[in-house]
Figure 1 (tube, helix red, strand yellow):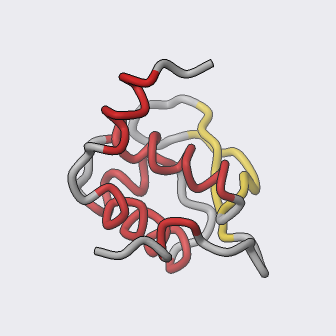
Figure 2 (figure 1 turned 135 degrees about the vertical axis):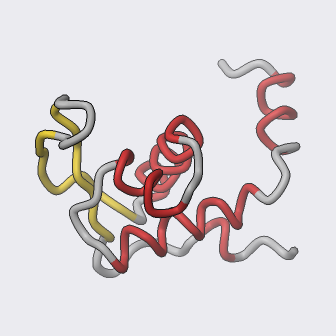
Length: 96
């Protein structure tokens, strides 16, 4: 069970939905990007990008499509692409 303080902290993140949209848009425009690629393309921190990717994976908006060797870190990383006909986007329905 998730502690209520963790849920409150998550909900208090400023511009969370905008960050999700930015990461999603980057992956849609450039399929097969890794979290590191998205971080470099958007200027967001890689930890922030990874958290947004996790949320998008849980929401069914993107999926892991392959893996590759990252040219900067040398590590094997997952690549992502958008899901065709995804479920309703939870964060798009939130009023700003």
